[in-house]
Image (cartoon, rainbow over all chains, first blue to last red; front, side, top):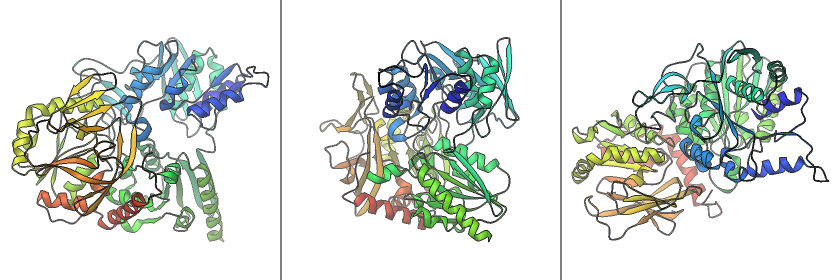
Length: 389
Length: 243
């Protein structure tokens, strides 16, 4: 998301300061800002695009007043830092500077209600094939009306509580989008009032993120053409997704995030809908936690591992310090025991991969294991090369 | 046989409903979901286990409101020896009140003699290692504050009221209390999450027996292997207690 916005601004000729590598806590934001100063203490950039972790907003916003803040959605994340979305919404409301204009997802009735006194622009994605009326999966972070506590009615659900909701008792409803879009064949057809424009959603990027970026960029005054050009030049960073084909085996390395049930469930849903046979290597352990503590794995039970229980998934390898927790969760989801191998050593675990030509291999890793995932990926590629000979 | 989950739409955090689902599936029991505004099944039918897991702040409030008319029935059921388990922040709903740092005080069900303080910005995240009888219990705690015993507060639940776990590492009821959770007959309440049943096969077996089931645990080998690793890790003196 941050990269999308920054890339589009760069493509439009702006000089942009950005915390591109995802250092989104207060220290990351501070170091990005410091890097934007010359030795003479002058600002080198007219624009800063900063990704701010919700929890860090407490420490960032007292010192920094953004012109615009985009909140893509609030779903449950790390239990330790974020507790639950209702708490994060309250925290953002308390700390959001009052002059900041919010760019909000109209299809997320939790983030829509952040800082109600602030100026706001909503974006919304129109109904598309595959949308359903009721939430499947384990997690729905907003089953009840936040005003009167009646059960909400959803006319459309993308995942969890992301969709269109209405309260049958008090009438609270998802707001209409100021920018609405239809997504098809990798393109967004965006409408805002009388204006219509078309823009690409880069490959493997969530259409919501592309629409949020387009909404923000129009709000910042970029022309529709510049927005479209800018998004066309953006791409997903290699730290998030890589792909290689060796000896008839497609190896896809994907950041699925750790301690984040919603993000992992969405990755599992994408894998489930991908055609063909799949072998999955799971290494979404939080390595930082493991160094000094022991990861709280409760999120595994909010995560839809049941999506992986399908004949297309031919084999699983669970790796890293929590590999046995993954094995248990997979078994409880219904995956036969004989399809699961587990080893706490990531390299040793990789040797269990069958690397069968015609079967795609997915390596799923967490946010703090980017380097380790790259090493595992290289090792798996070597194994695939050796087996192909 | 039926396992009842109370208010799953309000008390649905941290994967905890899996505790009840696990026990129900192992015992071959039906799983009954009682929603807010519905009469709990345990008030008029035989239920092997009543369960409530963690919820948000508003979820706790709604669960308190929903359960208030049925507190008398819950006490009677406990007197009869009915099994019930409250985990994570559902534990706080059974206390006297929750007090926040701004001074506001939210009355809870008052079934157990403690109160909970809540701080908006601090979060206590820790591993938990304790004992239930001779069995080791592992889990985590993730709270906005701590709970504190009110020694002379009346307790409407049947006596004797005992603590549930003896703490070996991590915080008990509060940071200075060596005991964690409460037990009145077969009603048990603990702030430990995990899901604590799935992470602790001995506890799961114990609960199944209380429910009247002698069925084996689900995925028993995988559960035991994961449990052994966690017990070993949590027992290491060099392993940090707090996040």
